[in-house]
Image (tube, rainbow, N blue to C red; front, side):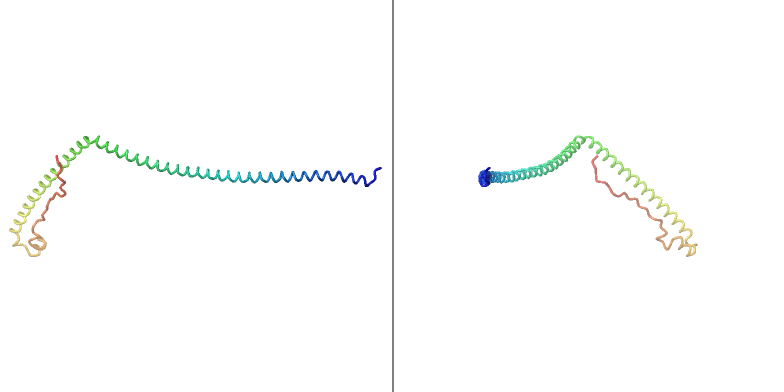
Length: 187
């Protein structure tokens, strides 16, 4: 056999070789870890940079959408104003197109109103003349009655009949008046 001391030395030599090999591997691992850490830092920085770019572009898109909405509202408002103006202008054209018929109807209405006015005035004058004749006839009857019977009547009956005096002995006057003469309209 091999003495224990020889095995130990040999075994220690193998261990030492493996330790050296492991130590060399730790260095490689440390370099790899540092390299991966550097690459990870670079990736994190690039991701933050890309996030800022995406956020910036999304904000720009939101701003453009807001501008488009405002432009659409303005466009809709302008279209409504244009529609109203066209409606107004077409209405004016309608007035012009219908002007001959409208004027003809207007002339007929003027003639009808003038005729109504003349008829009303004639009827009022006839009624006034009839009322005047009736008043004169009534005054004559009252005077005839009083001239025949006043001297024979007791004071109390005369007062009741005349209702307080000679002024009440007169019949009531009626006046017929046509008011509100229209403006003179051409025939």
